[in-house]
Length: 286
Image (tube, rainbow, N blue to C red; front, side, top):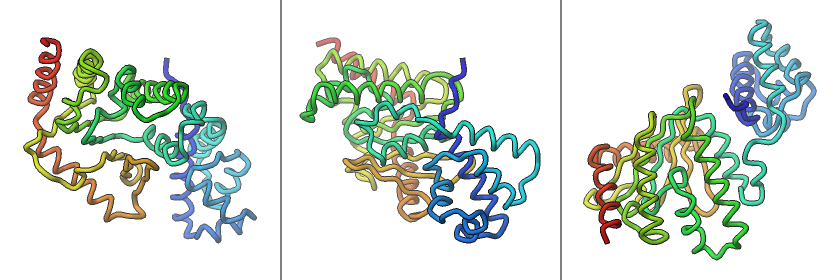
């Protein structure tokens, strides 16, 4: 059964279509807002996809932008109706920061997700036991750990299970596939899960060996999101989290170049999975 389209994806669809239509009409945001008697901030929120759009508001903009093709109007009206309501991560509101919520909306729409982590296995690939052991060291309450792990598992399922998911490439530093989070049994199961995910269509796992040396993102993890209908974004994973795209092309370019560099230096897929399997077998032989 195909899951319903998340409201964030409908808001994104409207954001892209309405921004493009306004630009094609030769109007600034201030001019367009004045024509439909909105505040400029309301139009900005619509064009950034942070709010839902009512059908009546949508029709006002479509009239202004001279969008009259019945199939286009019908498609956008359907998106407007689907833009209301909470996104899937809303029921984790107490453990999801605004920055991460914004990222999750973009991740769900990405065509390609490229991830690098220098220290631990990234959340997309973690087992429940590994995630629990990792978070337990942060001094969090048991309930907060449970909620964070539940969020991680649901995110993993949405991204890696089923059809229509993005193509995903994970480059793991060798340190991440040797650091025994949770002890030998937990870590062995974690390595087994990485091998399982790596066998799925659209998922690639590579290991950056110790001898690869220094590179731009030695000290931090990042995720590159690539879209068929929009520019790339990079999400830098740190305490607060931050995302950048067209507003900082220099920084985005540095991380795009960095991912290309570490991919070139990483072991190929066969060598990478062989290394992971050897580490797993060594654990189980002890």
